Image (cartoon, rainbow, N blue to C red):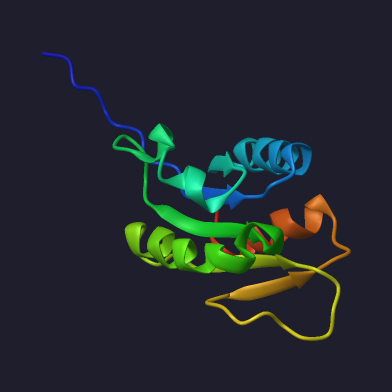
Length: 128
């Protein structure tokens, strides 16, 4: 009889960034570092994304661009967080003095580098 040992599930990091290239580059870097990074352009897409179904770990962190949560999108953010067990949220904010109100574990103001964001992810959720 052959026994197969299941591999541990990688920590899922949900990337909600409207701009394709920053989202793709951040996702690629996080995958290289041992995360299951899922990138979507907006909060509404999270509910249509089949890759957050069974067979993956739980969402351990949400990296959210401030542009993806403006206006009426805030109520969708509450639904997304409730759906995934209220993981911490890192907000990528515009360069301004006032912090936007929200359930943020951390606010990162522009300008920042891809490396800055990756370091924050690793600090918040260590890789597998």
